[in-house]
Length: 419
Ligand code: EPZ
Image 1 (cartoon, rainbow, N blue to C red):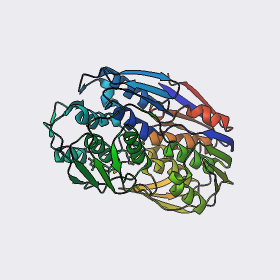
Image 2 (cartoon, protein in one colour):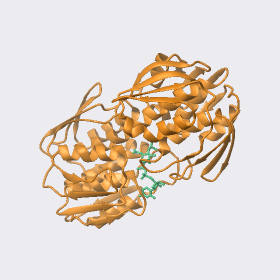
Image 3 (cartoon, protein in one colour):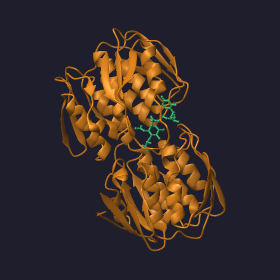
Image 4 (cartoon, rainbow, N blue to C red):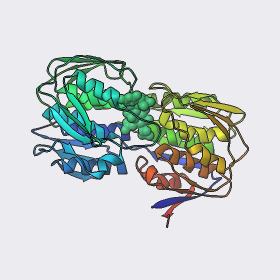
């Protein structure tokens, strides 16, 4: 197990390259196995643990995967098994996309229930509602979800909750169903659109992704294709917040500024300067920003995945800030770690009340989950003295080369063995 040792107080200057979107890539790879007679070559796949984990799962099904840096080739022509039951399945949330992909291609799947960040109950009832609406029988036995259908028939499905996972998972299965499926109250995240675009490149017939109504006309088969995943909105947002917190001037390259609008707007509201170009944003900050209120919402609202990094910035902003985490019921595990560094925060259910302090002081803190880990790295970057962030395997799930990227911006940060 590794840790990061950070000496805080350095301003950040320079530029950082953003990788492919984790939450798109972890859905595109399972979608690729729906091509039964040809291969997919997918570029801009991030080098993160969740992807390596998912590649192992897909290989365990009988697919052939080769990777050259950020480009992954998937050959699913020999795919036979519909049973994903390795330990890796339980290590991440997105392994459940294999259900929709296998159900679409083979009309059956048997996948261990997923793992993922401990940020709430994270039920899958909306996924099940969608699969059953398409005609599948769904059973959960011994921690495994087993789905099978004689036929998948298109239908209208209204999601009771806006769910990224359910929207993508049911879209996967509906792509190869007979007839038309209409998903209502669908999630609109950029990664939902990216998966729909990938499926259409494979020959699917999907319209409306990015709105709350997605229309899918089932096709007979999907053909392998070449594709490139969109940039990671959340990785980009994390570096934007870090730049605002540390002070200085950082250009975040290889982004889609439109996807970052809610984050840019909040940083401007706090007194930072955000300059948008075609595929980059530059954040300039003199620190000591004004506190603001944040309510996390489905896209295009403020993303819940940037809430934790943002809470660190609010700890050293002026005045009182209120965070309303409306998506997940338990996404404040990092608050106790921030308090060890001198933060003044009161948590009441899904509300965090933050009173800005002059400075944080270095301490030994832990990463409780992926985005909490990012929040603690930012805390270390701005704290007086030295901070050790432990359990950084959580961070490695979603942030490629995090210490190298911050070091290149001027931070004093090194990776060391936790032992
Ligand atoms: C995806 O999780 C992301 N993960 C999460 O990012 C992200 O926080 C979340 O979407 C919201 O944007 C991946 O894409 C792999 P949801 P997902 O289904 O799909 C409830 C990260 O840090 N719900 O949109 O699991 C659920 O409890 C990770 O990269 C149901 O009630 O999120 C939550 O309150 C963390 N029933 C809300 O909906 C269901 O069947 C949104 O969850 C499904 C979800």
